[in-house]
Length: 261
Image 1 (cartoon, rainbow, N blue to C red):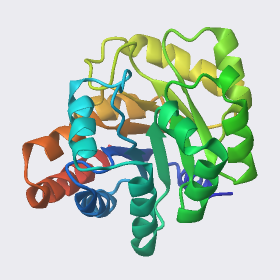
Image 2 (image 1 turned 60 degrees about the horizontal axis):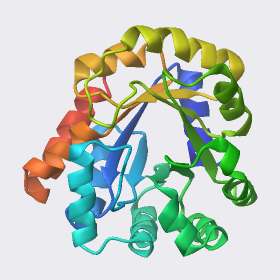
Image 3 (image 1 turned 180 degrees about the vertical axis):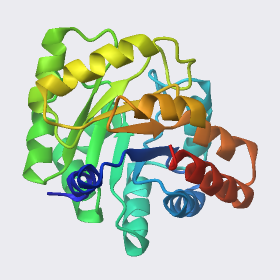
Image 4 (image 1 turned 60 degrees about the vertical axis):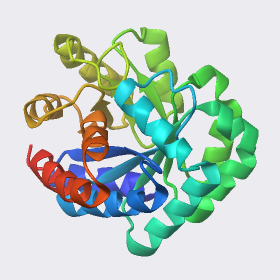
């Protein structure tokens, strides 16, 4: 049982929901990410999702696209991110999930990347452009190193895809609450309330709901149906708007409000 699995087990026993916070690693520079992770944990975030910046982030909206550009400009690459996780592990045992795209991992070498991620303390991977039927090698390596491989489901996922993800995923299933990009407006909440229970009947894994959660009201609404929520663009907007020192304080305050839903 790794840190993600322990977290869900502990929260389930207490009847509590999970709050996951997304940051783009290296935005606006790698040392700031360490302060932001610390601030979010102090604010009550249970799980950190670190985005691996990519030059063509097709699933992400303008907010995270700009964050990726800032991080890449600050020379944040996979080795930088693995180094960041290693530094976080000196200070914290908060579960860490790396989210990104397959091309940089393929170029790095799948086996080498997963082994390196395990070595520094990564607990999970979510590769947004890698469908489960093409994830055999990554799935094998993650299983070998006890790293959870998280898959996405969306309102457009058919039953066959739901069953496939239920079979292959570990840690939790990430339900995308809208059919657009990150940061888009949430418009299909009725579908979420019908599909998440359906997924939970297919799998014993927890289901986290993310995309489109911009405020405490939306967070409270979606936390009712999932085992937890993922907040991303709203956090990245704070980082974009303020200096790192002020952003860290605001992230902690916002996370504290979200943790009370």
